[in-house]
Length: 347
Image 1 (cartoon, rainbow, N blue to C red):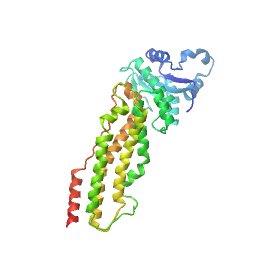
Image 2: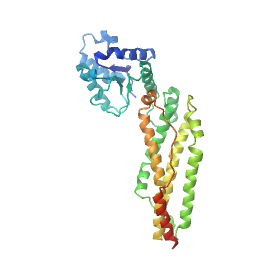
Image 3: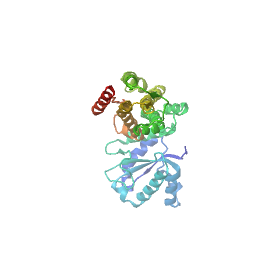
Image 4: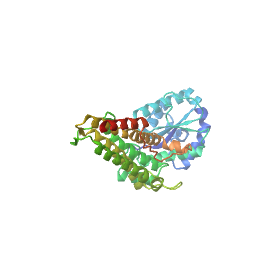
């Protein structure tokens, strides 16, 4: 990652200066290296200020604190800073703009989905500490796309930015499911390569065996893997720090369970059947995995979405639930379809 001369720089309208100063002062007290214009009067003296601020915001600061307000949108100088900031934000992949609302004015070019804090709700101290947490996460060089290695996990656990346990778990799960995306898509295309298994009879015995196998996969997941006790062992009790190794292991078990269910369905699709009724019944049975897989995929998506704005959410007081909610059920209409398919086999 690139290194910068300053940790943060504020971007604000002159009329909002007095509201911004307490945050900047608290940041300095926390050891954050802040670029503040009044601290650099000599360096700015005689320079083209447009070029100076463009260079500073583009190349010399890690984060820009954008203080969004009506004044910020209307002020000419603030408009120039905003365009510089948004140009860099567009060019780089990781977080750069940290918006702080002073009122409800919408800033052109700033997506509504961007995580933000609000000075009307959050104290200068709380906002400053949130910035410090962002910097801690950077020092760990850990984001949702960071490869999970012993070194990256150790760096994250050393810095311990707020919510690091959740970030680590979300990363393990989302990266693991990303690798399984092709198989996941193929399942809903009802496709799998031939696996060499041929069923010459009516397939009733094979269907029963598969029902037992799926039930066992689900039972282990619900009763052993995703329980309050295992969650607590990984993430710790309230107020306690988590265990990085346990979190990584739990995330990998989530991915492994997802893959087991996928493989169960692929085994059905990859089998050849001499009896057409047996083939139809088996294809219906394979759809038993649909809801389970969709629910687990939703969990992974939610983890990823929250991880992207984790510090902001936690600082704003949102309670992040790391409990894995899994609904292992078969839809009633599918059960009826499967029962009818079995009845045709028995004729």
